[in-house]
Amino acid sequence: MLGTISLYRRLLVWLRQGQSVQVDRYLQTLAWMILGLLLSAAIGLTRWSTYITSHARCAQSHQRRLRRWLANPRIHPQRLYAPLIRAALSTWGS
Figure (cartoon, rainbow, N blue to C red):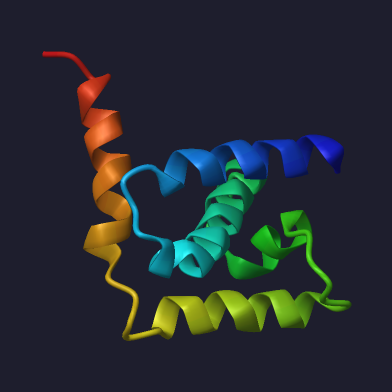
């Protein structure tokens, strides 16, 4: 679990580059979602929730948190994903 938290923190630092402080709580959830996706190698909130570390006691709480994030109209995916896409394209080469 220590490795998961370390990876989460590194991912969060990377996601925060070029973002405003206002979106920080959104980035925290996004970081957990990306981490869950990478470690589980599956697309599914139930699989991701096993990798999320928080004060929540049951997996359903994690799933509700992720669902709320995905349905939140105040989250603008293009603003959050733009740095990820730029970084991926910059290392892609010609």
